[in-house]
Amino acid sequence: MKFFIDTANLAQIKEAADLGVLDGVTTNPSLMAKEGIKGKDNILKHYVDICHIVDGDVSAEVIATDFKGIVEEGEMLASLHENIVVKVPMIKDGVKALRYFTDKGIRTNCTLVFSPGQALLAAKAGATYVSPFIGRIDDVSSDGIQLIADMRLIYDNYGFETQILAASIRHAMHIIDCARLGADVATCPLSAILDLLKHPLTDIGLEKFLADAKK
Ligand code: E4P
Image (cartoon, rainbow, N blue to C red; front, side, top):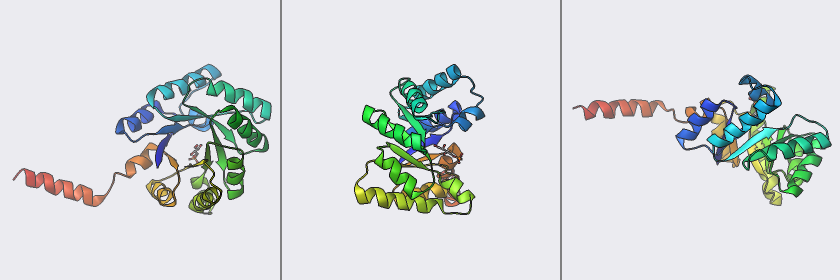
């Protein structure tokens, strides 16, 4: 399973990369705004800065919602760095653009996926990654993890190479559940990755070993 970090915060990206378990980064307009990155030039520079920290795929999201605009913006983003993956929303023109980018050899991440039907459509269009938002599904009292199971079944039934990029992860158990079900990637806040470290018996055991080592 690949681990991506779901942030535009350079310090957190560096901390995860230094841990030696980071395979990539996902961003979105909200995460960029949270870091106070404003204006086209600053946003583009920020993507390049991220690419210099982590040697892996970095998703950069288009803002356009029409086919022509998505294609123009996506091609510009893809030209910034070889690690950029163009993030495209699950809308009609987005699906058309996924097919266009796929045929051009530009890698894509289809975002805002909430149903098996959307996931099937994105894979048919050749998306490199598809991002089911499991936390947001849980937020509306539905079952985000079930969508991962449905996607794994559908993609395996037909041999789709599209990778399941579990997104909107809220906690460590989401990561474990996604790993059990065979999601290819989990994109997580740094806190969820670090929470995987935790177990009270580890703390108790280490405390005892250190105390005994002094004897
Ligand atoms: C990642 O690609 C998504 O944009 C992100 O995981 C959404 O997470 P959120 O639901 O916590 O905003």
